[in-house]
Length: 96
Ligand SMILES: [Cu+2]
Image 1 (cartoon, helix red, strand yellow):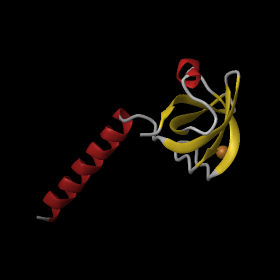
Image 2 (tube, helix red, strand yellow):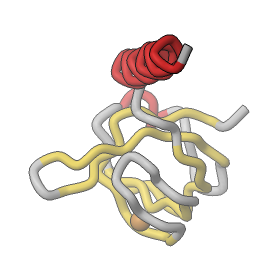
Image 3 (cartoon, protein in one colour):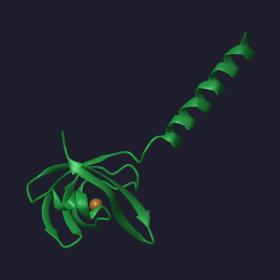
């Protein structure tokens, strides 16, 4: 019985890792303060993907087409990753 439970735990762990790997980068929340070229200043909440707490800062944004649809004051959700020593926003969209 103990063995069965250990197996069940191992299996559920395996599935949670698998779903995390298959899942996207977690979304962070924020409000756009300013957009200049391909950079957005965002007052953001915690960003779990890079271990950052809430603050206002400027990000380079890779998805410039998505950024073009947004303006200062918009509430957004976004995905950020570490890339070459910078924290880069890879996806961004209006918060629902
Ligand atoms: Cu920050």
